[in-house]
Image (tube, rainbow, N blue to C red; front, side):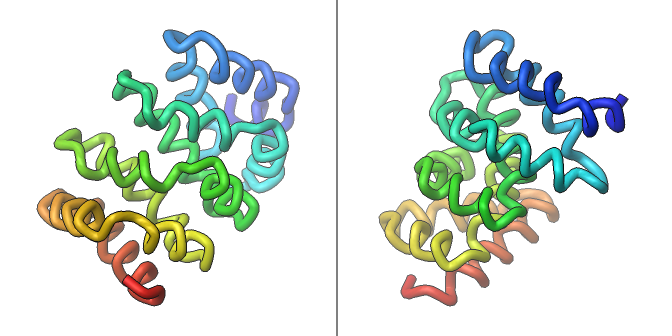
Length: 169
């Protein structure tokens, strides 16, 4: 099924439209996009999704009251932010602050997906600058919360810290 979606961008476009629209269907649409992106040989599909506005849609859902939608959006954003263009689009769409807010939540799923996204963003110069512009107390709280979590989230937090430390804060 995954290989079918990797070659059928018209179907991915329909999922992007669903993710943009009705919120009760947005999370399942983003979960399907995530499953398509997971694994190898997805660069063409990721580039297509970047051109389809998927990053901006994901960024718009990061402040949702629905935690499943935020988790799905930040998971897709993490995959797309691996690409340089994805990093720049996510930062331009204002994704950094809501991702830090999600990392500060007590929800482990949100901490995992937001820390993965922040890790992808923190390695770029523009990501370091965006992170360094945040309130220092918010960043400290974020790091403290992430370092008290499971080993994957801790590893993400350490990579975020190391990358962001290359900037001024």
